[in-house]
Image 1: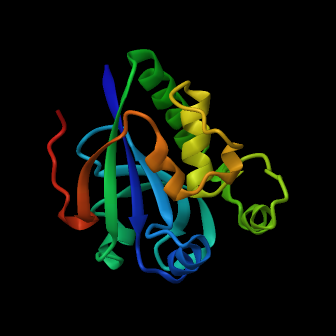
Image 2: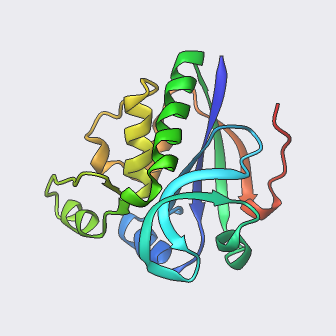
Length: 178
């Protein structure tokens, strides 16, 4: 068995505030980490810390520009057991996406259309929670009881076997990889 880590986050940015006000949930961002250290996160969001218009697939670092600027980001970190095969499949999917990072974009239009319950998704366009849900499904880890394009940050708390391991400021999370 191996573990993966799902992070639910609130950076207190304008987009985060909008998402939280619409969903009524305390977190507006979802990210995935492949080890307990959680220093490297995979998600969809800003490619540049200072611009919300240039969004897409991101590899975020705890000590990187975004979390340096938005250092009051709050989070809950969850740990989930997965099989070795599921872990390798997920890791392979992430490697593939990292290699083709610039071909994946943030789904600005889709997020608005799905808010009005129009079931649309565009090739290589995601929002953070849709991205993490899709990876969990494709790697055989978990399938939500609704289409992955409708998954919101709060939905991740319903995954069976999920264990909360940390609540607090992301900058203060310091764990050694096991």
